[in-house]
Length: 235
Image (cartoon, one colour):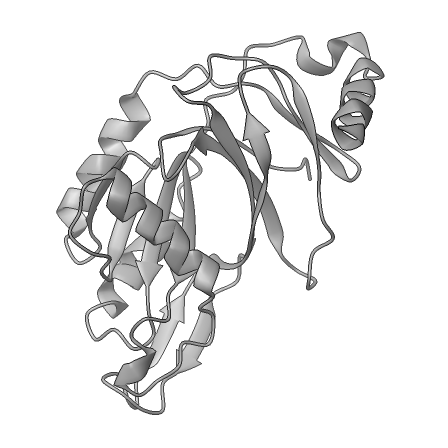
């Protein structure tokens, strides 16, 4: 209760134009690639998503999962919370099981990352979808999410930190033994900041665990739902 009260006071202390002014810019299409260094069919998906990441209208995030580690190579970027996020999409999208390479677009649709044409169509469709996002503003160690229509059942606010550099990983065992895989926008941190129910709220931003990471905040329906807004700190 005390934390919520402090955040409310922080909102009241903001200057009047903080959430005012021009209309909210259209958020980029969010592409989440679920991949693994031990996945023999993931290389082409990694490369295609890396190309999509160059588009200013796209935010591509690479989530490495470790459930193929038993094949002989432990993924160097995988974390349990990334696989948990994918499992939430599996349940929401009524899939039988998680798989790689999988691409989830705006939290609302998915396709095999090995089928570039289907991925491209999902991205094109998402770019034309109607949006009414809340404003998202960063100030110091806080992010402020404004008012807008919340998803049914409420939304969640997630902080994603990723490495924008290309990562070259030489796999020394398993199905991809001897290959050098290239991954871009590799997610290193995933943190749930709290709930959002359509009214202005402030959230504390934890300190990054390593230097050189970029941050993005995702506002989406709960339990693997549609992404309704994104926010990034101003350069």
